[in-house]
Image 1 (cartoon, rainbow, N blue to C red):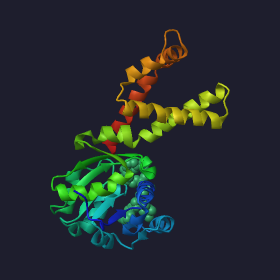
Image 2: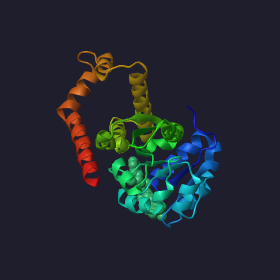
Image 3: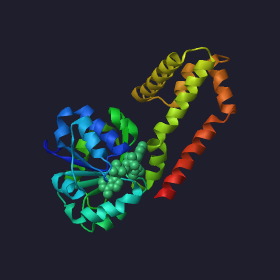
Image 4: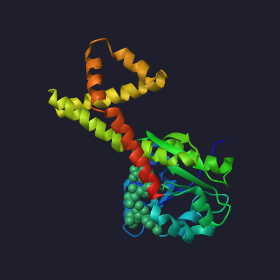
Length: 271
Ligand SMILES: NC(=O)c1ccc[n+]([C@@H]2O[C@H](COP(=O)([O-])OP(=O)(O)OC[C@H]3O[C@@H](n4cnc5c(N)ncnc54)[C@H](OP(=O)(O)O)[C@@H]3O)[C@@H](O)[C@H]2O)c1
């Protein structure tokens, strides 16, 4: 099923995540810019995004909800309740509200809205900005295929949409929501290593970025397991085997597991 070609989307909140999503929408389909709206809390951030991307800033959340088919709630978790109480009755069954707020459950939002409003929970990550995001997606209790398609028609522009059980969202928040920060740290460490090994920063960056992308593409396209891939690169007594042994001795694998579990516990606390 394809959604209405005139479908409109409104982002309540115009901060980091809203900006990344708007940039992703417009980059993927510039003709949709005229169907994208945003609000802020008074800082002028929505007007700045409007000037930058050719979307429109609206003065109130009420007007945004009335004008839009899909409402993306892009405020901090602590602000969700206040925003939803103010727009509550306007989120009718012919619309869909999707929230990116970490830790805020669909049942909480449904209770505040006090209607059979179609509510979705999302966990995007910042590569949505360049159409390479991972967007975890869970429907609430009052959604149907039509509401789901209204939301997915926009989300698919941003990258890969992955349907999860809502109880898995703290894990998803840790792994893919926070993931770009973790991967950024790893890439930076490889850049440093390249410099220590004698490359310029630019050379090290080019080598590690293309190696990361190439490795991920190969794992995905050939449906390889990581151990199969390692066997292809690691010959007995060779450079990869020696390097891998040093990395394992240093506890890289355990440190990554600990980091993701710490992020997951924090996601649960914030919720
Ligand atoms: N950043 C990430 O990588 C990431 C990843 C996944 C999920 N998220 C989720 O995305 C949400 C937003 O995070 P962020 O990093 O984008 O935060 P942010 O940069 O602080 O942006 C929050 C935005 O909400 C606006 N806002 C607050 N109250 C409002 C109201 N009553 N009406 C309209 N706008 C209002 C603020 O307006 P002003 O500009 O006027 O202050 C601001 O533009 C959070 O819930 C977070 O859990 C973020």
